[in-house]
Image (cartoon, rainbow, N blue to C red; front, side, top):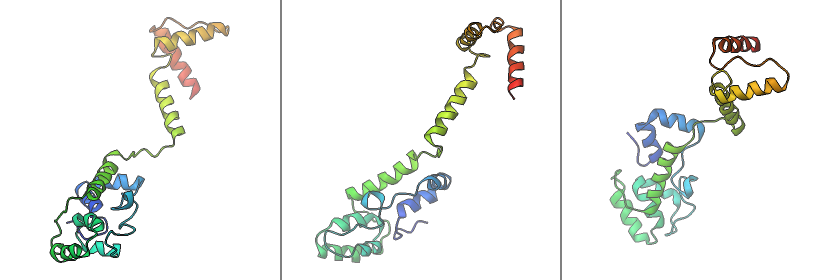
Length: 175
């Protein structure tokens, strides 16, 4: 059960509902926080001038609206009315943004921690494994041309038994 008075209940909800994905994504990147574009648990200041830490005494669904509310009397009423209602929400763009940030973090965080150079090397190796002279006519023709120009023996006909044996021998020699 998520505590709607915690510092980041939205992240806690994702951790509870999608534990495996949350764990994997958290290992790559910390979940965004509630305020300041995902960098802070509370705003730097509030429109009414109350201490931003006091917002943590309100349910998560009220905090953004409370931070933007300039009238201290309205805030006082919200503290009295909403303090015991953990599921209450006051519609506010800040809350919608916080939810969207967390959803985006969960769904779009790239779990691939390889460097761009490692990714390229892996892609090159995969390409070489799929398209090489032993299984690709274009690569075979290019290799045959290279051998002829280098004065080496021409390759056997593509797809022939002799070709398969030649590639098996060369693959074994390179191991």
